[in-house]
Image 1: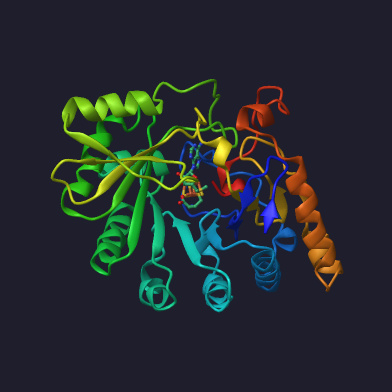
Image 2: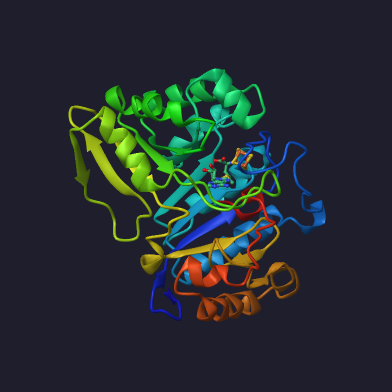
Length: 327
Ligand code: SAM
Ligand code: SF4
């Protein structure tokens, strides 16, 4: 079991498999993209498998694959098949923009990968295009409907963006009227790779809740797991649920059970901080895996109690993009 310096059990790995993406969401990356990692610096498929296997031995029982867009990595299914065979790994999930997942749905289900987080910030096509800067709306919606029909456990993540998609909050929520999905509204975070300057947010979770309640007064809170980042609700009579994620307000740090590894091997112990170390060379040079194993135990002894404490490492400006952190 991995335990950090604040006595929090760490059982959840968010593993980024690439920093590349086929969309250019304006809260995540500039139009021209970011300086993507050199190919040689990206972890290979064998390295991703080895890292996962060692961490599962150390007590990780949930792995979420993220990126960049995980499905732009052509060999992603090789990793997923490998993970599906790891004893001790209880949950494999993916976070995706839903553009290229379509051909893999049946195999994902067969492998038991039914928890999928879909990032979607607008139901309306032109709002979607404005935000993502790409023309993929129909494909994303078709894949979403196919996944609902196939019984995937879907959480749709939508960032509340002042001036861009606030009028989409209620149409997004309406997905939960007929469908058993969870739509979660996130606060915007300051990791946009230089897309725009960022001081604070206009739409925090309380304001999003008040907005929703002004349309639907009959809302009940539903129980959430202790380590959940979302506060969850159901509108009376709706099949699905909705959630609010205070990703900028950060009310959930006390129960954080997450470890992040980027596509280049950076070990990130808090979203709001800088990587603790890079494990690529440990994995490449030490075939026993011992150096990697020890480095993870050590990195977890340097975690900040909260994202606010961690943020003090910066002089106020976050230069990185979520596409290289993995969300
Ligand atoms: N490409 C995949 C996707 O979009 O789902 C996975 C990677 S993406 C970086 C992971 C998550 O980070 C997405 O849900 C996305 O909405 C979120 N994200 C990206 N930039 C963000 C920002 N500035 N603030 C809050 N969430 C952000
Ligand atoms: Fe790509 Fe996901 Fe970032 Fe959008 S949020 S640009 S889909 S990595």
